[in-house]
Image 1 (cartoon, rainbow, N blue to C red):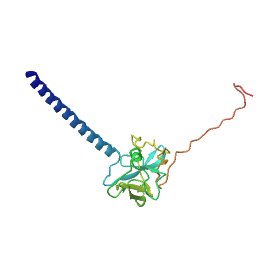
Image 2: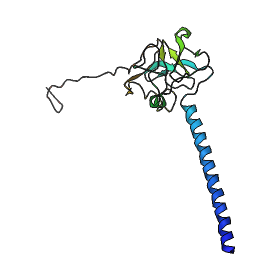
Image 3: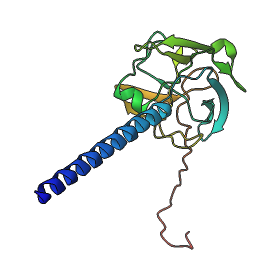
Image 4: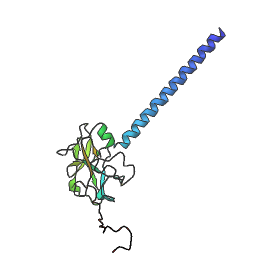
Length: 183
């Protein structure tokens, strides 16, 4: 009889422990989801778009200094990027009027309504995005990428694609002489 009450008590402790573990797991999951949502570009009251120097030249940046991109598949000022696409290319969202920072023309800033009802910042009628793999300010890893059916481009102050800067090539000619002194 003593063993049965001891087993029952042990069973209650195990159930309590399991309930505690499940509760903590759920809390960690919610915390992770909220953190991921924050990274993915939750709407800010007023998003700021500025111009900054990168290896591509002067391009649009968000308030954290991250490169802003345009998606070649977007049409008529509407985003063609949602779901998995938007996890890799988070849209620049704003619940208020976007703010023009240094070098940005306020008349080119606007907003468009996304398929989920949120407001996305536009520049020269192009919806703006960041790139999840640009971990630091002014990185341009997304430039020219072909993903989700079209290319992604950093955005210039005019609101057009920047494109990678041209590389210079040097040509040399040889006379057929392998070792100096040559004739």
